[in-house]
Length: 80
Picture 1 (tube, rainbow, N blue to C red):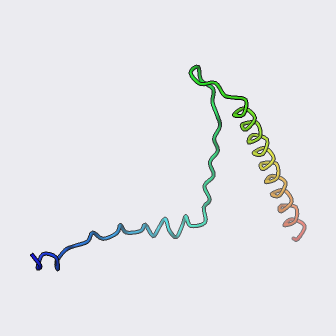
Picture 2 (cartoon, helix red, strand yellow):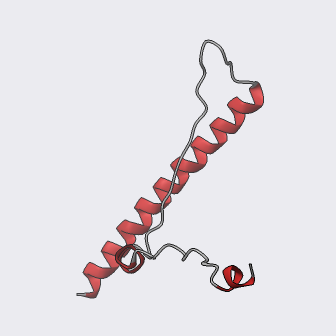
Picture 3 (cartoon, rainbow, N blue to C red):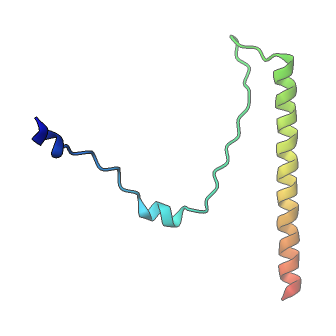
């Protein structure tokens, strides 16, 4: 019995995919969600207000990202 304990084999951890590790290291994934009303589920007033606030903040983020992109393009073209 003692001999079998000495040769107990522990499974090796899975190998990492080095291609993904090196090439996709800096990628940021972003997800968005929204509530959907169905015939069986109606949104409460707090759900509606939360959805509205999230939509407004998402629009503000998009506008801010577009403005910063435009400013960086202007700065890079004026630097040349």
